[in-house]
Length: 243
Image (tube, rainbow, N blue to C red; front, side):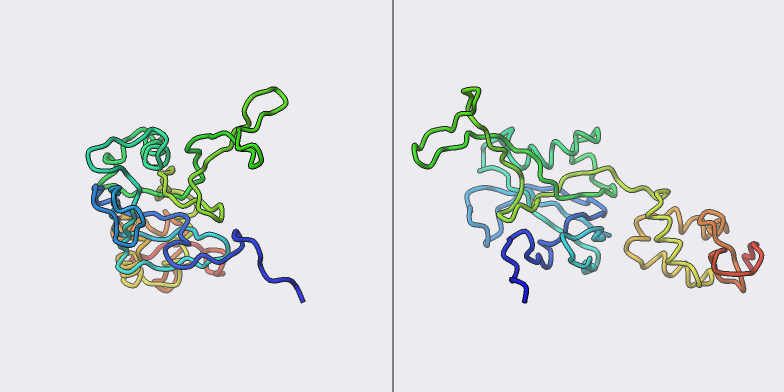
């Protein structure tokens, strides 16, 4: 019999903690008191509120799940009231820096769809202390050996969201998802899917194309018996019938 799992990195991370990457509509960013469950009640937090949110990726083998009503809120450690955030803080290194890398401030993304990912960003470095001497460890060059302090939890998993390049409607992943979503459906059923599917709602261009009669061409589909079909799955000759 094999040994049981003994590494924290291999432990399952369920629920919201297991979310690695999301995409949704950023609706609000605000500073507020920390949740009652947080250990440090003196430090304020930044609360981020999102709608039309879908889970794109989970840690490990966890299965993505659907968020209730597409709503998702999360907190970022901030500062005590009246103080300014430190340049090495999680807020500065993860949230603020990642937004600036995309050419904007976080607040400038409000009202837009964004993709966020938990990343192990470098916060700062500190000397490695020799437990025997209680002094900084020196390398062969006589300089202090430094340890990277990353934005990760005790198991080494990234635990704070950063802005990343957004996946647009014409990306291959999105196009293939919408293509699969409408295949086998007539125009009315396809419209219903595009209106209620959380991920599809994030890309209204496809609904517009459906209404204009260009969705089949846009997704390289054909229409057979008034239903969207993939050419590779039918022997029918390509053609479009929007009646």
